[in-house]
Image (tube, rainbow, N blue to C red; front, side, top):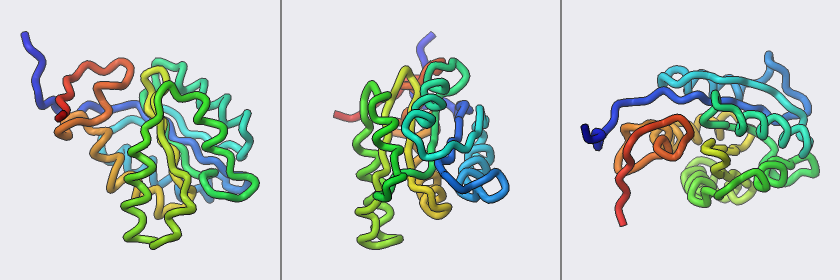
Length: 180
């Protein structure tokens, strides 16, 4: 039997990582916004953590999630700016098998309409690693809402056409037809 060309929604296992030296579970509004949105969309929260903005702590937890069969997507929030403690890109880029250049470009394009030229200070990025999509967004709650509402919600939905990330994730079996 042939696979359907337009699959139904497939719930994904998504881990959320807040990168912060100061936030706690009680004050982590950015991580909470991501958890709320992903669960409302029908996905499963695989894990959630808050980690200090330290290159090796970041790599350790994300490496664990990338290696796990139970995590298909990682969304990190924070550490993407220009302060001395903003280390998310440096920590996570070496873990990527492939970069998803279009994510950061599209996020900044969308953000331009919301925060103007301040968007150039975002080092949002994404990549694929061991069948896991890793998305790194700024730490503001509004940035997390923008990333989910205007980009991630569609790209993590297996029924979104013409394509989405679901077919590229471990333990997913769907077709994705792209143009070109």
